[in-house]
Amino acid sequence: MTVDAMTLQHATVTDTGLRFDAADGLSRSLRDGCFLLAMPAGFDPGPGITLCREFHRAPGEGPTATRAYRGFKDVPGVYFDREHFQTEHLLIDGPGRIRHFPRGLLAMAEQMSALTLLVLRDAMTELGIAPALWSEITGGAVDGLGTHWFAANHYRPERAKLGCAPHKDTGFVTVLYNEEPGLEASVDGDWVPVDPVPGHFVVNFGGAFELLTAALDRPVQAILHQVRQCAPVPGAADRFSFAAFANPPATGDLYQVREDGSAAPVRSSEDFLREFNEQTWSDRHADFGIAKAVGASGGGTS
Ligand SMILES: O=C(O)CCC(=O)C(=O)O
Ligand SMILES: [Fe+2]
Figure 1 (cartoon, rainbow, N blue to C red):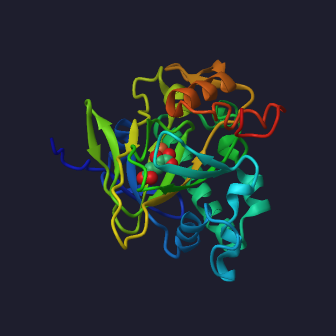
Figure 2: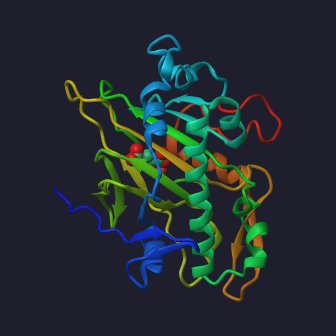
């Protein structure tokens, strides 16, 4: 069965925050679980695209000019081969980016990361959550603490598998760049295409935000999504995407806001993350994002 692509709300970035085309655009987006965000003037996705093409290659496997974008398979804890899916990805936090990313790529990743926080603030304002609570209930994520992942995804068409697992993003907000169709969202039990619109990010809300707002009368939906199997196309480059994520820290608690405006911790961040990792990927990386933060052995491996 063919299902029409999802119609998403549309927003632009202004000096003061987001501006949605529709008066109720943000409210609808929180219900839909995602929306389209026009890239700010001057945003250059070039370094991210180069990273997706190169990160999985060996250092010597290309020209010197892109050397700094290769060799990430050898960096401990940042490369993940999702063995049951086409995707292989690089997942790297803020300090890791400073250490390993060339300057232009770092600047681009931080621009996207800043957009996740802009969205998070506007969304909490829209939901009527008191700014005095923001820091505590997001584990500092709203202030740039927490974990600010950046992901580069490469879909290996030679693998006859789903592109990536059906999943909800784990954290509060994701800002995603992609160019090819393939992303699908679960709407009323159907997989519905979320097709890319040139010059736009897809923003979506994740599990930590869903949990935070679950007791409100307008809870945020963390959208369930996947990438369908990408067929090999002779002569065409492989599908890729890259994204910035605003997540809570791996230690401490996750919170819930109540209708009366108060907030309380509801579960440990570590349990929540582990459950998400296990349910989503069913592979050997269940402690992704946890191990390093709690002082065990290096991140990513079990
Ligand atoms: O490749 C895409 O379009 C989606 C990637 C995704 O869902 C993710 O990185 O969390
Ligand atoms: Fe995702």
